[in-house]
Image 1 (tube, rainbow, N blue to C red):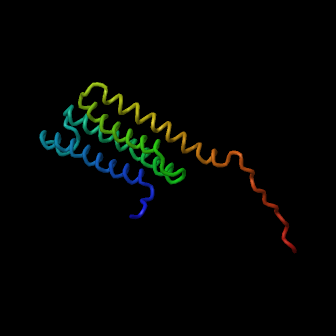
Image 2: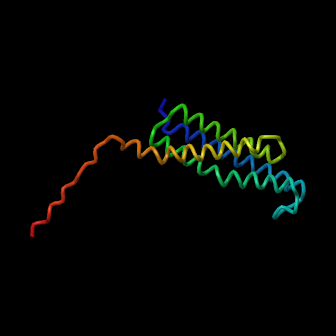
Image 3: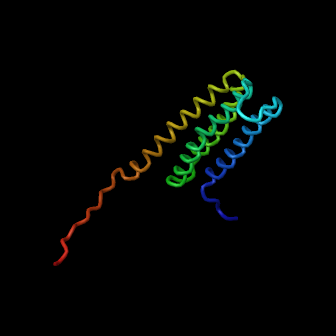
Length: 146
């Protein structure tokens, strides 16, 4: 069997796509039941579901991109698998919290923010760490004969 390149990114992106579909269906269920075709109609449940979906769309792409560039740059690692799984769990918890499950929204939000900070910081540090301790090559500029 062939080795899969960037398996964490592949699995995370697949999970993220399924979560996006699930969030859209959840909002759609409320929308259909309340017969609201456009907007939120002032329906509190629909507003919460729409916000949960919008919140997901606001943050998920950054996490998935960070996982991808880190895996591409540094390789597949156990800790990155852990971050990816934690991201997906947090993004499932958040909408349940928006529906009223105690602590789930805060968990989803805090974990998402910590992942943004941690993965973002690591992505910034990676190129700096890869050059640490290496001598910088110099180029001699020779004037053209003329």
